[in-house]
Length: 208
Image (tube, rainbow, N blue to C red):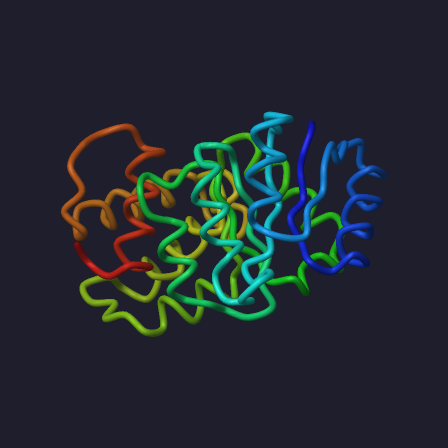
């Protein structure tokens, strides 16, 4: 796997590069701002871009705007805080190959590298803390508490098998929960992966 990193902290850039190298993931370029990221992606065509949200010159949303500019290249955004507007915008437009993690997750090497591989493969990975805050601000009716839990785990990118293991139930029970979620959200029949993303986005961005 070949990645690029956009992060204004030299120490964090180098740390991420070395951490990923130990896992067999090659960093082919690194930049300290959004413009540098766009140039790196154009030059290297990486499998994934890891991007900080706040970078020079304004330290507001430069990283996010650069991440949106390089789509559909898979993007894993790292942020110091839960930034709801940024998370919702990044996850819009048929979110595949996107991730939003808090920087503190980098300390868990196994969790972080798993997220890197899943996003690069086209998956969607959202930090559980982001999910907790975003879902906590929405009206969750008509979903039951169990369905809300399933939806939050879906947003983390878990498969049906992964959901079953986490919830300690059979895959058949998971499928029933997901079917009810789709029904209550009014999501018509389509590919399951697409409907999963739409179900998550319905609560991250508000009902459309």
